[in-house]
Image 1 (cartoon, helix red, strand yellow):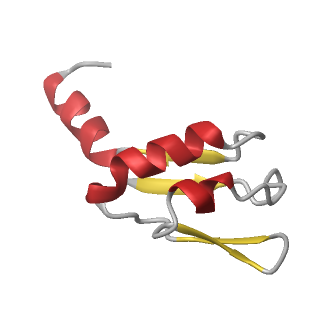
Image 2: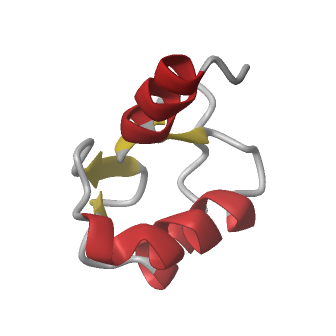
Image 3: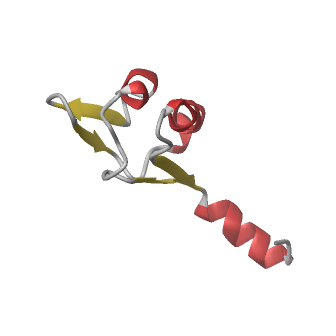
Length: 75
């Protein structure tokens, strides 16, 4: 699982840090720090954190599922 956060869009609401503190954290009032390669065991937390972002600044990518779809011919 790979995370991409649009830091230009992020407004520092910290909902992600509240819902997935092992992946996201706030540095000061507005700077978001995050692990772009979150552990698979955190998938549900990360999904909820991304959904809770008021400005939808978090995108979650699942490269392993994309590779499986390409291998099976599904798009």
